[in-house]
Image (tube, rainbow, N blue to C red; front, side, top):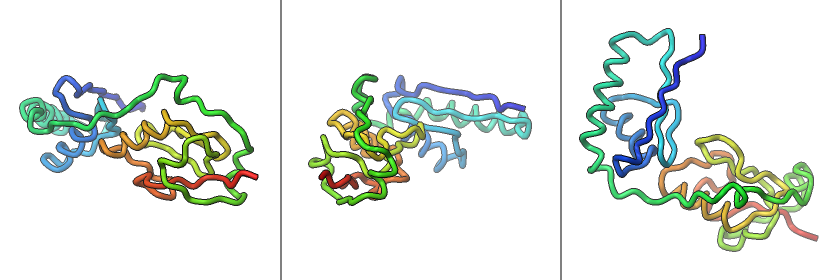
Length: 168
């Protein structure tokens, strides 16, 4: 049985999905399926009943009343789709297993990624090894991290530095 997905845009509350998710976890012990810079998503399954659904609805109702307390929210610099398209310059395995160095994030633009940079959510790589990094992707990831995004597979999960291929 597929779970029922509930997706709620919390930007109308002036907060982010990251902050709303943290608040629901700390105040109501509710772990959401996914939270991003604008939305929260809960899953209901056959294991839920009127009690668990009622708990979720009560928590969401309270969230709506405390939204003002969850401000201000750092903005996430989401580029247009073209800004997220990176040029694949080298085979991923060659960039990942080849000679690499770690550079400060402000020096990483136009370099070849030697690691996968996957913001969670959504869990889709923003950069793969061998792709040429650009300012748009790096600004998106840095601003996302400051807002609460997780970058679990990066060598530096705060993205203060990036592992890049040594170009020969």
